[in-house]
Amino acid sequence: MKRDWTSRSTLLVVGLILVVVNVIGLEVFARLDLTDDRVYSLSAASQDLVEGLDDPLTVTAWFTDNLPAPYSGNRRFLKDKLDDYASYGGGNFQYRFVDPASSEELRREAQQAGIPPVQIQVIESDNVQVKNAWMGLQFEYGGEREVIPIVQDLSTLEYDMTSAVRRLVRETRPRVGFTTGHGEIPLANMQRLGEELRRNYEVETVALGDSLLLDRALPDSATADLPEVLVMVAPSDTLSSQALENLNRHVMDGGRVAFFLNRVDADLQAGQATELTTGLEETLARWGLALRPNLVMDEQSSTVRVQQRQGMFNLQRQIIYPFFPIITNVNEDHMMVRRLQDVALFYASTIDTTEAVPAGVHREIIMSSTPRSQTQQDFFFIQPSEEQRRFEGGPYPLAATYTGAFPNAFPGAASSASASGARAPAAVSPDTRMVLLGDGDLLDESMVGAIGQNVTFALNAIDWLSQDDALLAIRAKDMAPRRLRDVPEGARPLIKYANMLGPVLIVVAIGLARWRRRRRTSEMITRRNQE
View 1 (cartoon, one colour):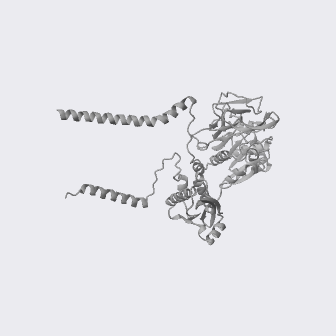
View 2 (view 1 turned 60 degrees about the vertical axis):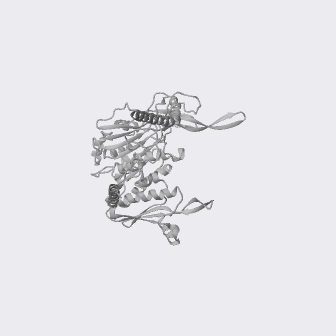
View 3 (view 1 turned 135 degrees about the vertical axis):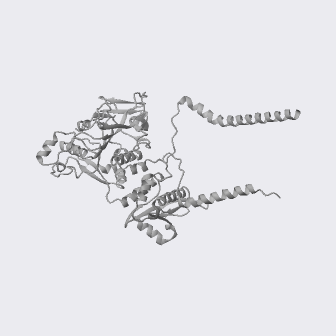
């Protein structure tokens, strides 16, 4: 009996290769991640963070076992992430899973750690039941502790975990200041933004018009008490000369600023809008920042509720309101906005790109209206209307970034500063950053509520200003399904029937090709036999 040594040798070689690959896999970590943002792989920032741990970091995953879908998927995703962190952190990153539902003592420990139970619905014996489940994380490092009470949003899981580790490792956190005293939207009206910022920054309010910021004889920074990043949201009152000089000194010392400004004061209830000036315009113009006193009208917009009289009744209807544009046209090359979707603006003004930018300063447009948009200026008619309009003239720039060395907006202030003994501001700032958006109401929760993409845009802007590209890169990851591009009306029937009939025609074509090939082969065999 003849032995098939070739087949046995092949099987043996394949088996040995599989063994060797598995042994290598125990020592070498690798993953093939084909997603656009590599959402299933750790970012370089997370890798560097855990690789640089000086002391052991322990993660306790308080997670209930055998959860039903979709929570079971959350547990698998979390374990994969923890495995990734452990592979880069080595011996300094350890984790364990604990099920608080298994004993009363563990439930008490979870409660003491700040991990609350959440109620979920499960189906048992054909009945829907509500049960308690635990899905939280606890981080311990150097005697300090951070907690993620509930693991719920997988798209922000890496951001949340890396932020928690950074808070434990960092000795100090960067400061972010919101200006006050000129009719700005108070921080209390931006509650969600403030909560998110406090996870990674020291957040405070800054009275920019405080004379103490100018009355210094210190040899170092004249604005030593100002945070690294200032955020000015919708000032409505005139800024004092002290406030403008303090702002100028902040920039001349290399400070960064985000300007979310209203250039037009619009009131939907009154149906009126007027140009708004705060005295900030001239200072910004010297740095190359300018907004036009206009309002953008976009066909892609939010809706408002209006009352209409029909007979004896007043009926409420939702109609498209073009002064509330929904922004999807973003600069895909800029990390701050490349994964943003549906940023909602309210009475937005356009960036004035005709304003000369100082030498050494670079301006980059990051958000624009759609091509189906236009503007109103000088005379504003903002009453909601169902009149069909054909918007043309867009896109219009609505947000921009500015980087480089900015000139001193108050060069004459140097002599007065020298006379008082304070340090005079420099003629040109170090390389710094600014953000300008022609809308200050997008973050006002008392007016428009907490809109997720608007908050994300503000968080991204502050991360970019603080030059925290690590957090910005993690937050920019997007796990949402990719949206299909808009298809022209005329092409939709063609695409529809191509999808319906295309596969059938392909199968028929393949069948005909095979039938012809077999027939040709059969004819050749017949001819050979006849010969």
